[in-house]
Amino acid sequence: MVTGYEHARHVLRDPRFRLPGPPPDSEWSENGSHAGFLQNMLLASEGVQHTRLRRFLGQLFTPRAVRARTARIEAAMTALLNATQGRPVVDGVADISARLPVSVIGDLVGIPKEDRDEVSELCRTISKGGGVASGQPPGHDVDTALTHVDQLGQLVRRWMGSPSQLIPDSVLTLAVETMDTPDALSEMEVVANVFSLYIAGHDTSRNMLSGLLLRLATHPRLLTDLTAGTVDVPAEVDRLLLSEAPLTFTVRVAREGCEIAGQHVRRGDRIRVMLGAANHELVTHGREANHAGVSFGEGRHVCLGARLARTEGRVLLEAAGRRWSDLRLRADPKWTPHFLHRGLESLPLEITWR
Ligand code: HEM
Image (cartoon, rainbow, N blue to C red; front, side):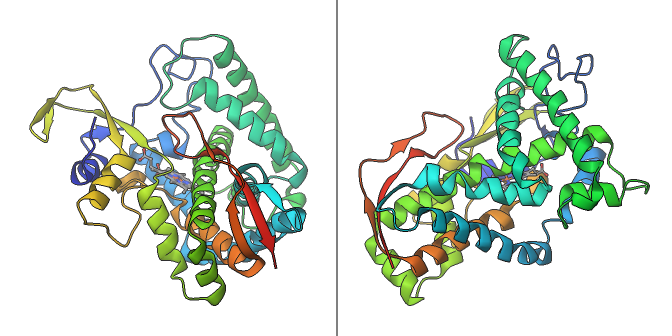
């Protein structure tokens, strides 16, 4: 386990450490029924495949592309707040922070609005039985995950079969536009990355947004300052990410024997890189930097959606400053009992609307 900030950055940057890949005896491995599915996900691929997928999907995450999406994120936030407007009590998680990412990822991937809840559910079930770090043997969860991958494949084929109904500037539109070119993604790559973007950008953003709401509810001055326009909003989002890393760790496997912090690591050893703990080292040693620490990872797999996630955070804070005059906790928040995700399960809030 690596907990220090510099050591975490080192492991994530060093090519001697790779992503774990699927367990050799699973259905996701080379000889399994769904071989290639996990390896075709950007966040699980390595080498040439990773470079190719990152270049392809990266087109949707450039500063310009994210700026062009911002008005749609603001519109989704406005729609969410309009739906809860006037209610004195809302659940910050169920009503706001769990819902904004569904719109944002749905729009990014290009999923028709009426199918978004179904896709969220499919992806959630797939990740239970086939998560990248999962070593689960075949069994109920894995079998359900495999069936759901096939269902997701059918949906993707249906969406791509009606190009005129696709959402502009989305993964699916890009996949259709490049279909007969050397850059084309295979069908398996499209399905794998629809799933990959869902799991990468859903719970992580939800955790960040709930953390921001909790901060607003427990630091009343922040809301007043937001309304007055005196807050450096991007820095506020990064401060939250630094202190409450939404993804608490990631895993790497050593390709060869080496040393980390005087400890010998053997070839094949799994290393858990503790992102939240690494950030806390900065905070507790007074080296608190004006950035999000390693919350978005580091090196070749650094989060592709960081700019988009930060935009979601900024949009939430700015909307709160405009529409709420007071926000406080109605009851104690409940943390998710999850080791990988640091976030809230419920956040009862009392809101005074403007
Ligand atoms: C606050 C929200 C988010 C956090 C904290 C977060 C965190 C991370 C971290 C730590 C990694 C690196 C994992 C590793 O190296 O093992 C990562 C990778 C990734 N993230 Fe995010 N993420 C967030 C939001 C998003 C969003 C909104 C998207 C897209 C819609 C996204 C897409 C990705 C992708 C595609 C990768 C894999 C990149 C690669 O392997 O090249 N993330 N994220």
